Image 1 (cartoon, rainbow, N blue to C red):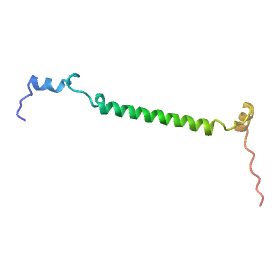
Image 2 (image 1 turned 135 degrees about the horizontal axis):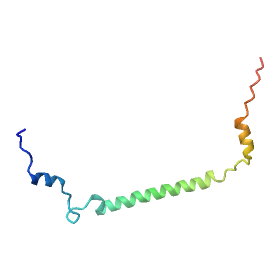
Image 3 (image 1 turned 180 degrees about the vertical axis):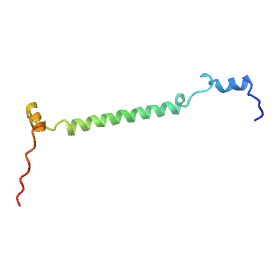
Image 4 (image 1 turned 135 degrees about the vertical axis):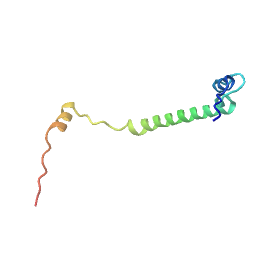
Length: 86
């Protein structure tokens, strides 16, 4: 270390942001926009596939018609011990 602190021009240069008119981010380029559209399309297709799978396989399953009191009875009553036959 030489004991030399960087001058104000060096410190300011490190904190400056590139101007938006001179430099584009990658996502603002043609390839970046294409990549964003492809990712969005993949997400939409996957959501549509999940919806179709749910409608076709899960929604048609019949639900058991059980009154709430029967469910409470099943969970809170003590279990009957199994009878052992020796």
